Amino acid sequence: MVLSAGEISFIREADRWAVSEVSNQSTGYCPDISSWPEVARALDELELGRPSGFTHEVVFRRCPDCHEQNIVREDDFVCVFCGSDLPAVWNMDPTA
Ligand SMILES: [Zn+2]
Image (cartoon, rainbow, N blue to C red):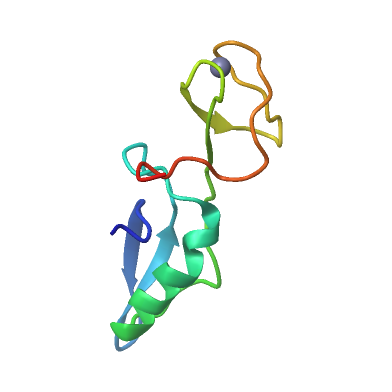
């Protein structure tokens, strides 16, 4: 089970490595931004310094009508492919 996915970059601090940027930008897994606590827990287990949340958030939704994968921009929950309304709740779970 994949709990989150995305891109991450690191910087060297005085005496340890830390996360400088982290996002949920994975067009393969399309994780919800609510997956941050799982990311934070994994980083904390590795004792890596980290930000308090995703430094770049991507809102993924699947269109209920044409089934295309959308990235929601500026809170505009409209399918860019067919113009249908996109759901407010994350719906990218491949097992659902
Ligand atoms: Zn659509």
